[in-house]
Image (cartoon, rainbow, N blue to C red):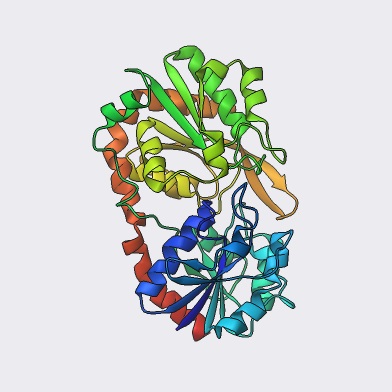
Length: 383
């Protein structure tokens, strides 16, 4: 089967970029002819990445004219599907970006669709119905939302990771010593893009760390994100206002901008943390939660969207409803007090839950999840 994969560039370093890299190779391993159609730009300093790289590990990357917005890349989808003579197109993106009239190819299509809120986004549902695409949920939460919206025969296939790459450190004590983390220091990690200023809940988590640190001064907040993004949140300023600057460790900003961190380095970062906090307002999936647990690090997640299904042996925090107008759905604002309380419980128990966190995450290994792809592809072409 000739498969066209439309999503972020596999070298972009984002969650969708990682899934593109993982699944394009896996689908090729299954015997399919795979090409990648990129929908966005690369990391900072590589703004023309999608126009400059035409091959990924032997997999063709179909290029088009530079575009200012992701929606503009979707306009190229029919032409790219025709160019590749695709039997099926798989899109991994915000489905509302796809115009069902202009951007839908004339072959079967699978839309791997995130559901961040308490229900399927209104425009996502419209696109899925009008396009005739097979709805593919990346979470059980999303699958339930698709069914509640009355979509026809939605499928489920979660995101996955390579648990041979994301694995507990061989010598965690030595790793932490090499990283300059003192004995007995409790490290809370948060990561992600700050362009998505609201959804990731950075402000709430940093305020919660302040409260936690007042009770447990031998603690450190490790932030794997940009200190300041012109389109997002100034985390440096926020840390200064909260009075926690001396207790925050930032990722190397130049390397972060170039997505220069290898999977092994990210895994080491996860492994050095005592917990990873990701109390988002809503998640389509939440890849960091699985990656962290694969490295033996339990997580703190919000009691909304995918949090309950991905928390494993970790901790859930309370949320308050927040109406997200574009999606016409409810998100959940994480409670600062509840986050701080979860950090306090984790301070007592996190070390005891590292092995169970790892055991939970291996359920999302690429070899386990990948076995579902043949049924999904069959459902799409025989729809």
